[in-house]
Length: 251
Image 1 (spheres, one colour):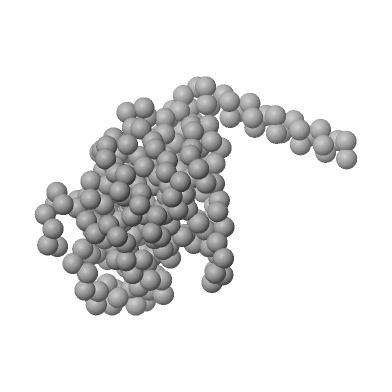
Image 2: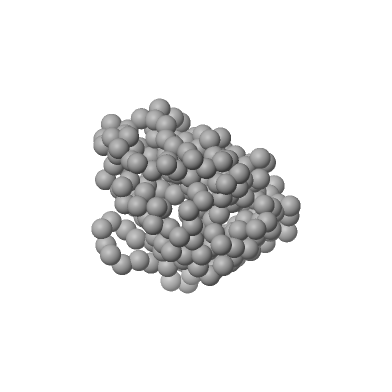
């Protein structure tokens, strides 16, 4: 790494395991960005495919990587956070691709107690089309109802002086962290209508259910966002249950 620590604007952290078929294109989407003051941190879980040879052959001065067994995606991301030197932290999947909007969003980074986020496009399999899901800004209540896309967010590094990913949640630790963060008024949240990433919908999170998060979600909302959002969501759920029950008996 030729840059001094203070010159690294963004640390892009990628957790991988047997991701060789995707990794080259992922790295290329990063290096083609207009913003250059960044580092790439790949935290690999001990891949057996071509991932390690790709990393060894890469001639990217901004690339740092490690490979060893871990306790899952969020353990890898926590390790990556510990390695990061950037003023902002960004998380990317090996099967995701950065878009030009990422550099446009990066141009807005100013306040180290503000979370900046944009929009994302989803794709599935090898289909060339993309879907725009859950776009726009997120209030506390909207986030309480719906998980936002992790890859649409640029976090100030100061967030991770206060929060880490909870390994109890195998799939939705990012959602759990964001619930706490959105309720934390010491961090502002600013949305820009820029599409920053094309992300793959068919990854680990689409195939595995996070029962622990489902059990804890309401209490996370109460803890992070307070009683008002908690009660509003519970009332909404009750209305849905009553409506479904009425429709069942009238059918």
